[in-house]
Length: 247
Ligand SMILES: Cc1cc2nc3c(=O)[nH]c(=O)nc-3n(C[C@H](O)[C@H](O)[C@H](O)COP(=O)(O)OP(=O)(O)OC[C@H]3O[C@@H](n4cnc5c(N)ncnc54)[C@H](O)[C@@H]3O)c2cc1C
Image (cartoon, rainbow, N blue to C red):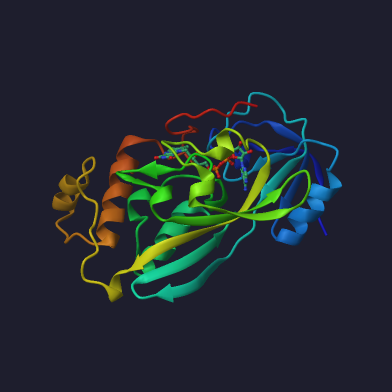
């Protein structure tokens, strides 16, 4: 069952902290609820909301806002030193990075503290400190907004480029991304995982911290560097390095 709220403030749902209002707002926490919401609004163009960190809300939103808040992380399979992990779209990206580090799964530690949700990460092929989403991306599940069809898009389908993908081009506005699957490395099962420390000030920060390079310490170095450079959007509203979403 979905709950529709009218004249809903989006102030807490965008990193600029702009107090725009949604004419109608629905938060969906299951695929079933998402399907219900899409069916309910089948004649209207919905406005999808993730973590609200890549949008500048200049006006109230007259389209129905569907907040994709579906949570869950699943270890699909382990193959030698690789793990295949699926995270649902509503998982916070940074929390997912920390979860992987805590499980000794390597590959996304350089992308700690990127704001936003897992479900939006493929749209611009998020990246930071020498690592991009596409480096560990296997596939994402999507629902076609108009038809309700479910599809799995693999790495080659997404045509990832620098902060770019089909989701910003030929397939713009076509799908809701519902989950993303990653291929990560279980560092307990290999001795030759190469940390990426040469980008930016990571090595300097590791020296400052006086700790051995590891996926944990690289993430901590990135967190420290990022925190010193950009204001925390929870304190001062901002949108990081700016992209292209104005509403
Ligand atoms: C302080 C700061 C630092 C940043 N640093 C970086 C950085 O280092 N690297 C980087 O790559 N980016 C960076 N960004 C940009 C931001 O982190 C990314 O663009 C992120 O992927 C946005 O995620 P979100 O969930 O907040 O998206 P939102 O702002 O909620 O949505 C972005 C777009 O995706 C659509 N959308 C939302 N959910 C879905 C869904 N499930 N399926 C399909 N479409 C959907 C929305 O309608 C909107 O058009 C930064 C932003 C901030 C504020």
